[in-house]
Image 1 (cartoon, rainbow, N blue to C red):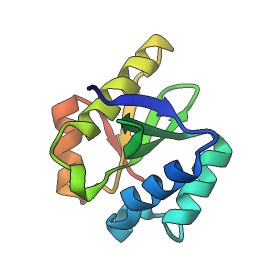
Image 2: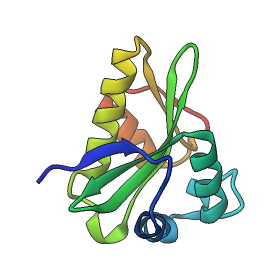
Image 3: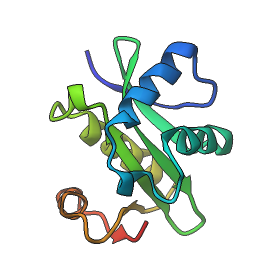
Image 4: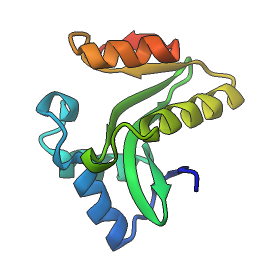
Length: 132
């Protein structure tokens, strides 16, 4: 079964538990500028910027997508530790690129410049990396 990407606007109780698990293992730099994962998620849901990858009715990964006038910006991409290295992040990234292209906008990846894994992800996806 494929991972379906969706905008999370009204998460169920199970979705909230899944989102908490996704960001539970996130390093502190990934949560910045938010105080903690709960603040990040509450803000993103309220602003309509939270997307997530769903497989078998469970959320496995999530990110924030800001739809700007000049370009779209993907940030705070995180996959639950248990499901990493299975293509969930790539699926979130690919689908966001598709949505941005359909809107006629380029997609940028936002992350701290000193994080090598973010630099590598941006390079593999041929995306500009901008500071978080």
